[in-house]
Length: 280
Ligand code: URA
Image 1 (spheres, rainbow, N blue to C red):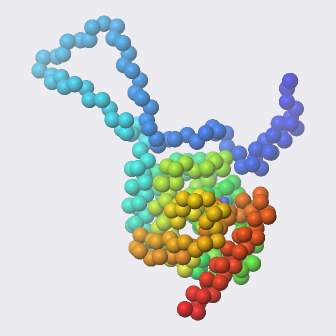
Image 2: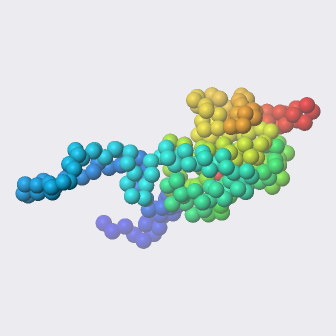
Image 3: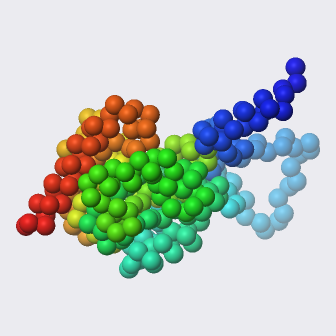
C-alpha cells in the first residue's frame, strides 16, 4: 500500500524532532578503525612469469593491518596529533583555530559547524556537556536547544548567566550524525582539545553535565546517578587541581523531571563553593 504524503511528512517530522536529520547508517561507521582485509589475489590463469634475471625476489611481506588506506589514518595517530596540537595552543582563540583546522575526527565531515564554546571564558565556573545536538550544530553554540534553555534557567537559579558568569563547552565539538553517541575513538581524539580548553580557561570550578562528560573529564567509572553531588577533582596537564561537580544532564532532566531536585542540590553545592572560594 502506498504511504500517503501526509503520512510520510509525519514520519519525517518525527525523525527530525528526534534529531535524525541525516541520511546515514543506523550504526556508526568506524572510518578510522581496522582496515578491510586486502582482497585475495586473483588466482593466476597461467604459471607466474619467471623472474627477470638479476631482480631480487624477497618474500612479499604481509601488509600490516594498521597500514592506512589512502585518505585515512589510524585513530591513535589522530589522537596523538590532537594532543600535540592542543599543547601548542597558547590561548583559547588559538585553540579554537586549531580545532577548526583539525581534520582528524570524522565527525567534522558530517557536522555543519564547529561548536567550540559559549559564555565568558573568564567565568569562575565552566560547564562541560557531551556533544552538540541539531540546534547547536545549526547555531555553532553549545546548549541552545531545549536542554540549553533548561540549563539557562538552572544557571539563573544560582545567580549565574551564560553571557557573563558561565563558560560552556562540550567534550565533543562536532555534532554526531543523528545525535548518536560518540564512539570511544571519537571521544579519545577530541579529549586533548577539551582538556586544553579547560586548562586555558582555568575556571575555579567545573560542572560536568551528564555521565559521558564525567567519564572523560573526571575519569569516572561509576554511573552519574551514583557520583552526582559529590565533589571530584580534574587535574590539568600542568598540574592544577580544579574542583568539579558531576551533575545530571539537562536533557535527562527534561525526560525525568522528578530528578530536577537532585540537580538543584548539586547547583546549590556549586553556589556554596563559589561563595566559600570568594571568602578564602
Ligand atoms: N547536549 C550537550 O551535551 N551539549 C550541547 O551542546 C547540547 C546538548
